Image 1 (cartoon, rainbow, N blue to C red):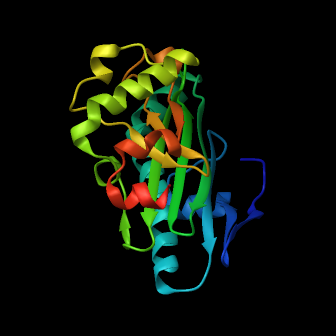
Image 2 (image 1 turned 30 degrees about the vertical axis):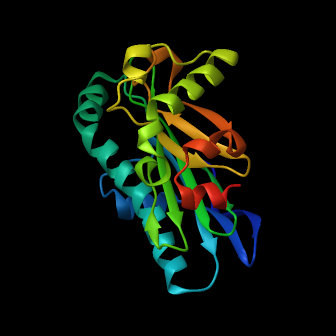
Length: 232
């Protein structure tokens, strides 16, 4: 990893909250991954640190960082055998890049989504999302089930489908998408909710991981009452 680190940017969020961008150094990575070899593996991992007062903010910062490190460790552990075999053949090339988007909505919802792009050889790499949504008022992590009315799930999916049809038409596997057991991941943004789809879930691999954002005003009907009021 040739670039250097530390705190890179500060984005003001309102009411005393802000984000600082923090990226792991080679020295930190070697402490986290004892087998890390920067000559063979290129790792770029950044995460947001919330600047604000209170024990809960301290706790949330720990959860956000832990979420990224868990994914990094699992990916690296999974690919150790690939690393060793490829190194012996002299063809190894491995990279793990983690960046993110982060928002605080209505001074209540903290929404962070990591976007991971990794490559360990072969025809193409892999990419995926790691979402983290936290309700400061409730003190809990949010997911799809806690925000939307499941009685209207099919109708909500038809709205997402129609928005996608008017745009890039990324959703290709209609039967998988409309399967009632399938729930997309979510990210809260200043303008709406972005529905996140991991690679291969509802589209061929060439589409990669992707998101479809829908404005809050179009989602009012499908939100549970508390969040309908919050995002009105």
